[in-house]
Figure (cartoon, rainbow, N blue to C red):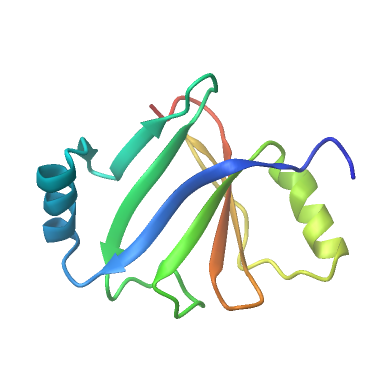
Length: 126
């Protein structure tokens, strides 16, 4: 396996909720998490980068085409290299790569139908 195109770790956990604001408040008030507009951002000890927990509305289409209640986000070191490897292995990407000020994103669906978001962090997300 090459040195590039590796998963660096979990980038985030995204879950559907019938009332995301209520759920955010519960995690804030009961578990003491410091929330912002995106949810909770966890700093990674000894690493540059963050991990995110974020609830989405139950009717979100962001997880599509998956109908699962969860979407996984993995931080990657080289999104382009990983996409090449996924396609070479017969995988199928969902949509086009999207670039935001804090990173590049790509999506695929695992064999069980769970949507996976791949995130190469760029810029300053914190």
